[in-house]
Length: 136
Image (cartoon, rainbow, N blue to C red; front, top):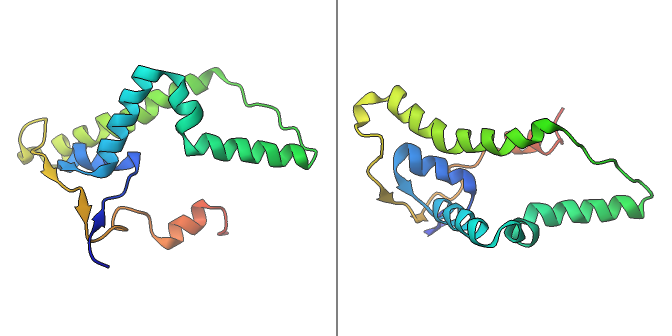
């Protein structure tokens, strides 16, 4: 209820490029990319919550006596490229081809750092339950 900071999710960057909404997720992601360029893998190694979750799961599996083998594939190299294309190129292409009257390739940026509808860009409860593997 009321106003709060917009979601701090890297996926919010897509709204910035597609609609021109400068939000907290865009600023966070830009700072994360800049920090990674300056400090290298240290940012991903010690600053990412996903890696902490993976380490916790690995520790729990070892405590249970399970030793999973690492997944190794040369195709994993392309995952960051695919993610970058999806997050940075797709929103711009969508904006240009879906609504060509919007004008230039760079949208007019507007301030969306504060929102009164925090959950607007998140998936529905049904999608979240299905994504968590709790659905059929």
